[in-house]
Length: 315
Ligand code: SN0
Image: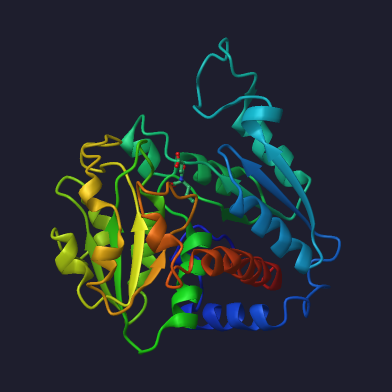
């Protein structure tokens, strides 16, 4: 595997899952694979799980890691080509990226949707500049449109917990005080489409995800109907794609609560975290034994290690 940006980068989906199970069983079996190799993690946005799990994954493989929080510690980077740089950004990505690449063997990069320009976000302008100029493999730690490390962990979690070959998996929109990217939801749909699961997406009207991700995935606008018989409930807020970046609703009737969970087939509750309690999900649900958010977060380490291992092995 050269880069890890989307599910399409994985040469073999089934094999990738086997790698993840193997890494989970024996996290230290490949501690020489990354010897004398360095992973640089570049953050343009906040992180807790991604930073720690990816670093830990690299350490399990014997890699060295360096982390740069661009907005706090680095120079502000210009990304537009051809601009007169007389403003507040002292350095251009055109130099910064190959410089970073010269210090390491793999780069992880987090750069959320900016919600200024739909095309810029959906063309993954920042990630693609890294792919073009770094000279080393690039791992997305959440780009503008996808969060593949999250989706890989979501997949592993469902595989570990499913009690039938084709579970009903429901992705539900939930309210939120801020406009959040579509990346987690897009990516989840993209990965679930590679499985045999029954996938249903539910959200209020106006929150339709991009057609390039949804394809013919079933949308059920009635959240309660969507929940009926579900084996997994995956909650996530996202801002509107159609009215790009806007909050069209903060309707608390979409919060995942115990009453709605009672409609399911004793479903597991999933969320990528961080989660706003009693906005996205009630305390009662996230504190219940059916909540698997911590296992899901732990699997971030496992699948980051699987992804890094696949890259190191093909270098
Ligand atoms: C990010 C998102 O894409 O939704 C990262 C999720 C892994 N989430 C947030 O930025 C949440 C921030 C908030 O204010 O709750």
